[in-house]
Image (cartoon, rainbow, N blue to C red; front, side, top):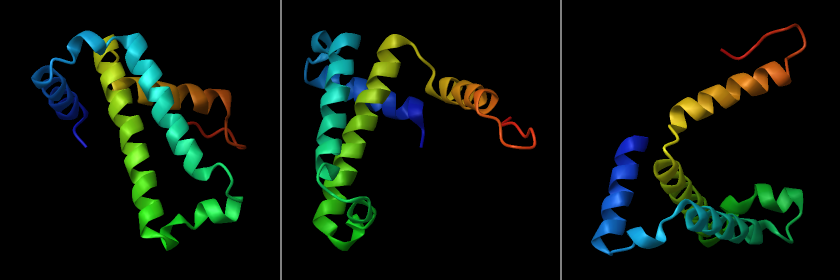
Length: 110
């Protein structure tokens, strides 16, 4: 997945529709949370076992995929509009998490 290319594509998509004035970090963060809530809603009343078996129903799996994609698209836009390099941020966070939660025996994420 080419994050930078996706961000360019999202900028072009928004520009073609004159949506740039609405794509502020605040609005994008709010939209991200709405989409995350829509994803959560799909799992809301399922048991843990039911939540693991969504592949049984193709329509359910497609709805989950759509909501995951919506979350990612807003996250990509939010990172783009705030100047956050997602690859660097993810690698730095993984390293922080490894230091905070070391594996027994002292192995760390590099």
